[in-house]
Length: 227
Image (cartoon, rainbow, N blue to C red; front, side):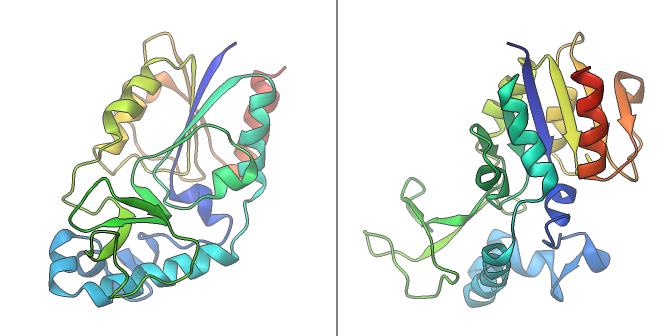
């Protein structure tokens, strides 16, 4: 069975109404990235960081997968599909995708700020100061902040290297190290990039570019590869 790797980014979830860090000149709800998405920010003002992610979690609870998420899940009817996503939402899973690797964490999970392996599902909209792990330390969002290592990176690279078809969708390929995934495939892999405003790529000749949004672009691509 043909192995497909889908590499998705914020543009994928934007069609479900979820805002991105890149909206409004790099602000999200009037927050600067360095104020809410770094270890330094957590140490300086954990309450502000928690509030920021509570806003995002509340938004996620109201959001629904869009048509593009469902199109990706339907690929599993014919192909061996793995989704590698930079997104911290669970919209791929809710649409039915079986194999999803989250590079940058998951908004509906939390972990101990001290014990990295103490990870919990968090089905509530808010996480607050005083919410503790079983060993009595504060819980924080299970999110990879700027300046932190990306623990799933090696696994993602290995998955990309196994791909026969790579579909890049909704990502500018400007965030590293995540962007390296798109350039880790074997030379015989068939690569597609779906984006209404495609970024300039150093190896653009290796990609078939579909200049469209997620839903439209996937519809065009599926007709092409399933013909």
